[in-house]
Amino acid sequence: MPDVAASDGTTVAFGALNLQSGMAAAAVSDSCSDPATVQQLDEMKVVLKEEGLLDTLSKHQGKESLANLLARFLRARKGNVPAAVKLLREDLKWRDDEDILGLRYSSASQVLRGQENPAGKALHDAQVPSGLLGHDKMGRPVMFIEVGGKFNANKLESEGELVHSHLQRFQWWLSERVFDTVGQEGQVLWIVDVSGWHLSQMSSKKNVKYMMAIAEVASAHYPERMARTVIINAPRVFSAAWRMVRPMLDITTQNKIDILSGQDKWLPKLAEHIDIALLPEHLGGKTVLCFDPHSLDPQLFPKASKP
Image (cartoon, rainbow, N blue to C red; front, side, top):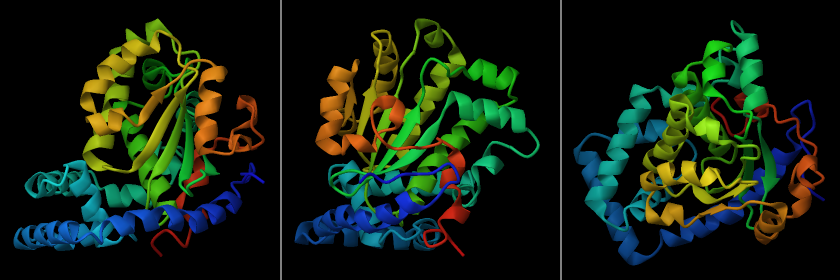
């Protein structure tokens, strides 16, 4: 039976996620027990202690173990300790400068100024629907987001009074909330629906800026968090967008991204990773999901969030 998320934001799917995520996290923990890796992690700890960054790291790491966190950054830099420490140092500065910890425990409405600008939030929700579907065959969370033909950053700014910084912070929030719901351990499988994407969207500098910002932050601040990204319903014109984003991603990340057109292409690929019944109904699955970003609000997941 697939997990079903009802329109009231029920946490049934989360309960399964919390249990299953331990399976995927266990594999990460095993990689930290290799003697050579343990030595490298110890080297990282020494440098971080010397630089006085351990307290800052502890503040931001959430429920993720220190070993797993450091190992993610180490793998992202192919075992190069100085490069891994540099990446982590820059990440911690970003988190402090942007108050990412405060963002993590905010609601979608707070991020998108829903109380003072309900029309803007409603417009954003309609243009960029998203939802946590359940878990894949390896126990990893499956996140769905649609950034298709309806997405228009110019309209969000002119009619919704949501500028780039609001859109950017929402994407940061989405990542923070997804990982917080599973205790900051493991990776996430992303399904991105770009159906209806058209050439005129590429002529908008604001649209392009939005896409490039997503790619940049994923590599710089969420290393080794993406299990795989399957982009579905991609029209031929989407290749132009991919050519701009691709250089911002390292080779390992690029190899984890599938860009597929019709259902005959993406359905078999997704079947490798998930029970197809997990998909939303409009994509041929059985999951009923309202795509309400509020489903990731912290108050719905008290065990994963700070008290």
